[in-house]
Image (cartoon, rainbow, N blue to C red):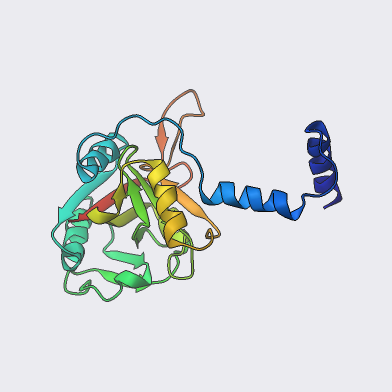
Length: 215
């Protein structure tokens, strides 16, 4: 803490201020954070759901569309069969009551372990501009379910697709009184090109990201 205070004191001194922030200064900062001003943004064209699918596909995210939540297990079963993937998965608790057994999939509601190969999650929202999923950590939305398995399947409701990243943060501020411990953004499979500029998928996360879009 001494090092932190020393750094902050030097910053305040460079700004021509001294001492700790007073109540008035803290109120001004809180008001600014509560109502941030938006910078310039490119125009958002088209239907958000269509734009999201287009941008996500460009990032190597695959997708399927279903009419309602009850159709999700069969859509997941199709995907697993096409990719010859294990029909065993972990999921967020909100999806445990779906008809997984009827679709031939063994699903457990818990955080993923290193041995789990398929993780099924929802998403707080999705960003159309970048094809990105926004996931919040919490007791019923463990981050490990999307990060540890080789295959991440995300259930996304069309009504939760927003035009831009700024809209995603605004939605989070309006629906949550405080920030979660972690906010994770998923833009396609994990990848790196650090070694000889050769693209490698699954470097530090899932090899595959598949979205089931619920209209």
